Length: 135
Image (cartoon, rainbow, N blue to C red):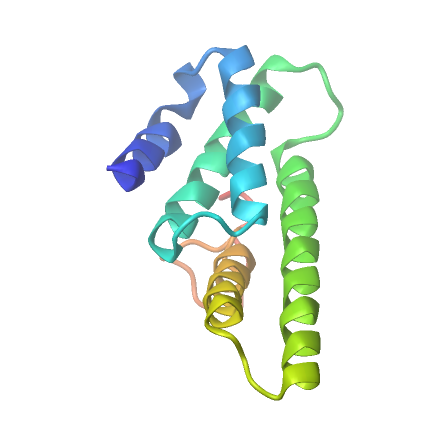
């Protein structure tokens, strides 16, 4: 399944050829930001993005580390979430009812926000500490 493929990328990302890592990263991020990925795949997709980010940082001579790169695309993804929420709320305010399409979009957006805010936390930590070394 797609979820299993994303999990494999998450685990084996360091072995993906760099050109394919870049291409896969860009395509996956675009799909996630377009909210065309089902809710069941968002978490695995974000995990795969992190692995592909690590792979790209291994290959590139850059002063920026993985944390900074992840923060950049996560911020961009969150901006896409914000725009989608604004669209849904504006539509609701104008029509007085939430369409099924906007309900589905809002579900994906809110789930994405929840997953994004968990980036940097590990399951072994309590909620008061960030996993700065885990990204």
